Length: 135
Length: 114
Image 1: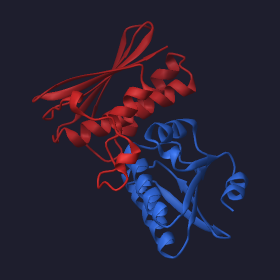
Image 2: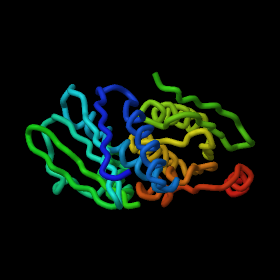
Image 3: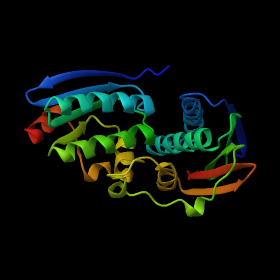
Image 4: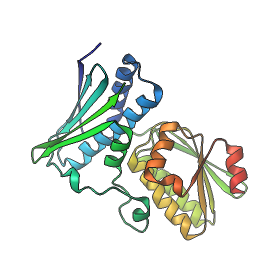
C-alpha cells in the first residue's frame, strides 16, 4: 500500500486525541512499523491534537490526514484558529519551569524529538503541522 | 469522562500511587491532589506505579513538575516504576528524570527510597 490517505475530523472534546492515536496505530501496523515508532507517532500526535484543540482558540473541529508514503508516514494536523509563529516558541527547560506559574509548553519540543520532521504552516486563518516518521 | 483511577497505599514511610488510564490534565490534577495531601501530612517519599498508564500527555506530565518542586521544598523524593518506554522517553525529554528516578520494579524502588 503506498500513497494511500486516511482522513479524520475530530471535534474539540476532552480526550478526542485518543481517536487519532488509535487510527495511527492501525496505520502503523499496516506499514509494519515497530512498536517504538508507533508509540512515538502516537505521543507526537497527542501533542499536535492538544495544541490544535487548545491554542487554536477555535471551536471548529480539527482535521487530521495520514498519508502512507513509500518510505514514510506523513501526518498533518490542522485547525482553523488564529495561528502562531513557531519560530518564537522557546525550547522549554524544566529548570525554568520550577518557580514558574506555567509548567506547560512542551508540545512542540516533544513533537520535534519524537518525529523525524516537523513543519508548521500558520496564518490568521489556521495552522497545519506536518510531521513525518520514516519506515 | 476520564477513565483514570488511582489507588493509594503505604509501604512504611513511602506513599505508593497506582495509576490506571490516560494521564491527561484531569489525571495529573488527581495525582497532584493526592501527592500534595501526602506532603501536607508529612510524607516525604512518593512512588508511582505506572503499570496501567500506557498513555500520557505533556499536560499531565507537567503536573509532575509541580510535585517535584513541592518535594524539593521539603527535601522529599518521588520515583516511578513499571513505566512504559514511551512514557520514559517523554519524561526524559521533559527533564523529569533529571529530578526523579525510574525503577524497573517496586522492590528496587522501595530499596532505593528507604
